[in-house]
Length: 357
Image (cartoon, rainbow, N blue to C red):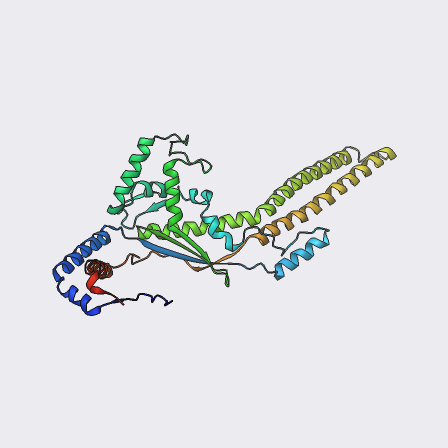
């Protein structure tokens, strides 16, 4: 039994070129329409500017200051755990942190100003009322709004946009937060741990302002997280120090008052009472000095736990937008129009163009 030979489909290039040569009119019309659509999209798309900031966080290594503080702490019988890093938030998690709702909502009240100085408002109001929308996106926005209006708001979500609760955002607040999340890009180089924060916006000055604000808030969050326990310990030691000082001052005043009022008496009971007051004052003083030393160590630990960030590249107002040039859009549109017309011709002339062998 003979095996069936597989059919082979070839394209007759001569026939295809002949079809294209006789289709100059429609080829020109298709490319012209594609060029018009491409330019309309290019001119209708708002310009966007991108600002990047680069940070280099400190490495978790021990230094001479850490060693000296640890030695001083061991002298008074304390284990301050200097130089040991048990961070749950490491640089690889910074992009997720920036995309969190709490972090994005904290950007709502940031005051921004346009480059021409015509507007100064908070970032939430700017995104809600003062940004341009591409014309080709408006039909979809109107359709979405119409559908939501017909469906009604039965989600039970709050409708007051003046109050922001990250736990329960309104529909508008959620949309603005989602828009901010898409405009912020954070990457971490795994080899160097350099953090790159980029913010895209329609105004160059606002883009630079928000990039610097994101950098500042990220540093503040990491600093607060890493020093939280040390600051709690410092607050506790400050309370102990205040109590110890108050007790020492009270004991000293009692001793001084008793000594002044009984300095001419030689009775043994008065001397015994005076010795007891002096011993109590000395004990209070010893406790006061020890707590004072621990208080200084706690302050040093807060400083040691405070991370240092080196700004490799600071925020700078961009000069050029990141949109594709009109010429490149025109060339791409003409090419796509030509490809589309060739595909249509290949389908219409498929019997002449495709040769089945």
